[in-house]
Each structure stands twice: as structure tokens, then as C-alpha cells.
Length: 224
Image 1: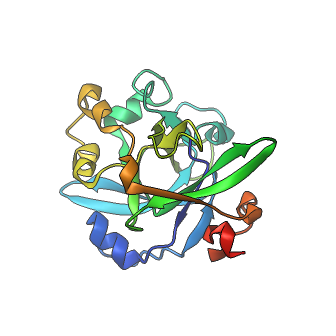
Image 2 (image 1 turned 90 degrees about the vertical axis):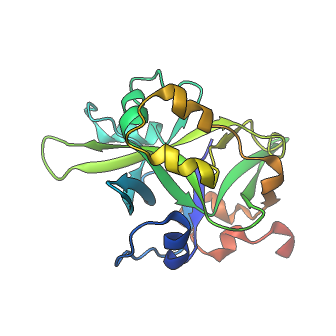
């Protein structure tokens, strides 16, 4: 699963990596992004990529209460094409959720040790995401998203049995292509990242509280 992640890369680096249109978007560094917060996402808009903000926790258009979003921060790749909450978004509303690392908690007896997981290159990457827009009886429309998960790769199985789908760069274009609506073309993209591309290390329990948001969250535990 994916319950917390980071995005501390410079916006210029993100623009270059994900080829979205330059603008006045300000992306403050965040070291402890939690469900219910806004995240940076990229969608395909005509012939160009466009970046913007989505609330993390998908709220289907038919939902009666936005609180359902807290139960829909992740969607399983194995069943996403079948679930009523996600199948329409899979066909029509896909996005890249930008990140440069995420957290998972490894069980050791009665303890849960927070682990920080990132690419060995330390470059930003994209989670495969889905988005929806919800309109309540009153107020502005709310655009939300969920992050796809899959079985953990060999490098991470000792930490957790699931991991978010980190898309290879050469798969991102197809994922965003709005002309593609067939799940049979999309589902093969949702595979675990190659084990050799990933590194993980223990961090302080400081990260356990979403109120704590600083570089201290990703400091290796041995450095304390």
C-alpha cells in the first residue's frame, strides 16, 4: 500500500522530467504527504501534459459523502478494472501522482519500523493514479485521486507485501493517453518496479505523525 510519501524536488526538475507546461505553479517541499492532503498530479490535456493539484483520497462522482475518500487512497491493480469505484476512472481519468519517495512500516515483533523507499537514482518518479471530480449539493467541485498498488517486488517483500505502482518513464505516455480506454492495454503497465532500481532504509518514528513535515523525516535512523 501507500499511506505517506514525499515530494521535495524542485518544480523546474519536475517540469523537465514530466514534460508539463511551465507556469506559475509553486510546489513547496513536503516530506510527509498524508491522505486528505493535496498532491501534485499530471494529466494529458490535448497535446500537452498539464500539472495541478488533486486531493488524495478518491471520491467517486456518485458518492454521498466526501469522507469516503479516506477509504480510497489506494486501488489494487488486480481488481481496479472491476470495482465500481474505479473502473470508469481507469478507462477515462488516469494521472501521474508525482513523488520522490514513500514510507512503509516494517513489522519487527510488536514494533513497526518506518522505512523510507526511493529510487536508487534519487530522481522524482510517478505513481500510477486515477482521478475523479465530485460535486456536492453545495460548493465548488472537488477533484480527487487514488494511487494504484501492486504486489511488492523482491527488494521490498520483507517490508510489506504491497507497493505503489511506480511507472517506468516509457510507460507514462500510454498511461496518460486519453485515446486509450481498453483495460487490456492498461493493466499490463501496473507491475512492480524492478528490485534493483529501489533502495530502502529505516527512519525515525518522527514520521509517524503527519504533523511532522521536515527533512528530518527522511534522515536515516543511523544518523540520529
